[in-house]
Amino acid sequence: MPEPGAAPGLVDVARRWAATLADTKGVSLPQEQLEQLLLGVAQDAVRAEPDHRPAVQRFSKLYSASPIGIALADSDGRIVEANDALGQLLGYRPSALRGRNIADLGSADHDIARLRNGLSQLMKSSRPTQQERLLLDHHEEGPLWVDVTLTDLPGDRPGSTYPVLMVSDANEIHLLQERLLHQNVHDPLTGLPNAAAFDNALETALAGSGGEQVALVYLDVDGFKVINDGLGAGVGDQVLRGVAAKLKSVFTGRHNGSVARLSGDGFAVLLRGEFTSPQVIALVEQALEELAEPIYLGGHGIGVSASAGIVVRPVAEGGPKDLLRAAEIALHRAKEAGKAQWMLFDPELDARDRGRYQLGAVIAGALENGEFSLIYQPTVKLANPDQLAAVNAGLRWNHPEKGELDSDEFYPLAQITGMTIPLGRWLLAESLAATARWRSRFGEAAPDVCVRLPNRLAIDPDLVLLVKEQLDRHNLPAQALRLCTDRESVLDPRCGEVLDSFAVLADLGAQLVLTISGSADLELIPQHRLPVRHVILSGAVVDALADREDEADVRHLCQLVARAKELKLRIGAEGVRSHDQAERLRRYGVLAARGPFVADSATGDEVDELIERHAH
Image 1 (spheres, rainbow, N blue to C red):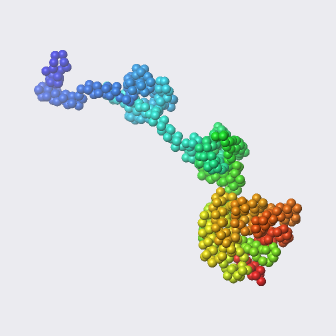
Image 2 (image 1 turned 60 degrees about the vertical axis):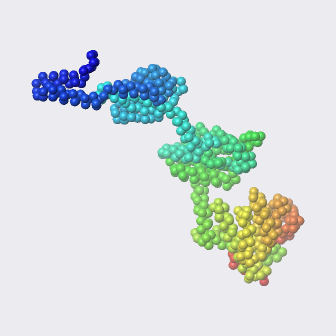
Image 3 (image 1 turned 90 degrees about the vertical axis):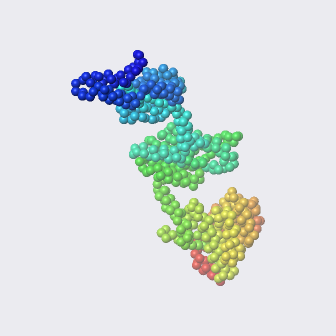
């Protein structure tokens, strides 16, 4: 039995309803049987829905102690209860949050709209649980990044639900993620967008088919290695920051301009809008002038120059790869023109260059397929023009489609593709093979062979070994070989290697030849103690005596000849066009010469004929 005043027990309830039902017409079961049946139903109901007060107590304790901010709202989304964690997170007392709509906690319009939309979908039960990261307003500190979860709890009435907002602090995590994202797409030294970010910006700029123009400018700091190596990497870094700041000051804010750092000393500028090529060029010239102004660091006034490649075209014309390639080609052409310059991309020049670069790309295969042959320039003694002194060996490319190509048509390409050394090695080996054949056939009447060393081969540390192997292979004395070099190789930063190689080759007996154009070049010989035996006059000093004998030109020539004799050198000339010019040079002390007055060029068979004729 229940205690007095307490709620009736299950047995009492069952008896009362059994009596009622037994007294109702249509019920045929006895009251005792109905009582047992209803008692079972009641017990099942109690087991299915036990006393909910312990559950409510557990929820209340969890709600109050939770480190996550929680707000309970009515069906309209107005907060009816908020825990302490939510109040601390947003800088309010929990009571101050009551009555506010959940959506009104958003910081900006789009945050409010997202919360309002979430509540709407929640009440429609289409999305029972939603999670988002957005900004809520802190009472004092302003916008705060939080992770929000919107869900619902069942109400007292069947089918009713009430919104629940759960909020956790994501501000530090979000800021860290933003910082990491910034680092992924920005250069840490200059703060500019990096290459990855620039690629994305370029794709975005070229999206669509608008009538606007897009411009891409590639800039490369000239000689930055000198600054970095000479003054240290720290100074170099400061210079790059200065370059970045100057480029931003010129381009940012104009035509949606953005500046990025693509590589060590390489930068790019992207513009989009309504402009013309002259307007872009004017900005580039302004930037180059700004860069030339010294940056003062540690007592040093450091000014830099830059080369720039520019391409301007309609947005809808071509894709990112085409634009990048065009800018790179224009930059390369600007550097070839002497640096500290800009160059505008020219489609016609590009078409021509494509043909040149295609030619350069197949040099290796052409060498392997035997498409190269030797071509010679005979050098005669001016005192006896019928006598060969030497033959200068060069290369000719017998191209299957383009015909015969002289070395000046493919050697610059070989330097770009790294084929200079393989070509130089082949030239040396074939020249010595031809010399061995001439000596075998003509004996002492055979001329020496002179090979002009490409700069890359002249500084090759294996040069001595290569020459020695070829001489031994063809059983030739070293005196049969003349190796010709020029000012560029002697003044190369790795000059020490060149001088060491020359000294060893001279000791072997090879004759070293230096091409000179004036007194300064001649003085390199005593200055660097070059073991040179012959000098070859070239350029203006020879051309000046082509048609007449000007007093100043003759005096200059005589000074060179006199100085060469002091240094115990034999002096020759190249580029001699006529017998009259050759006679003038002979009269003032030049001993040998080559050029059109003898022959522009000669094949191996023609050299055989010259040797045979001169031998008799």
